[in-house]
Length: 152
Image: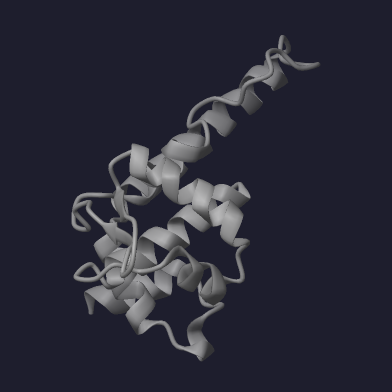
């Protein structure tokens, strides 16, 4: 699954803020860590603020703070703020009216449902636990291995 750039930035920002939920973090610090354009990250953080996931404070010592519930907020909740979740838009495509086209649509819908279920089952708290257990040598390991290690 390929996420839009803003969605990835939002996930990084939420993970960073939730990991340090007791303090405010400057957007510039997050942007620097993840090599993100500060201007683009500011737009993402404003969107997260409107969604009630983060809150901002201005002035000296200002920044952003995670205000969600890390044990309840899941990846799908964040992704849905930035991109449509559901059947692909765009109307009908060539071949859709054939038996093969209908069969392909059934399979694609099942994959979409499975992806949606997986994303809604992984909370920010779970992601933070996976991050803590991830070392440079396991960075490319499948999520399944990281989740299994978490439950062991």
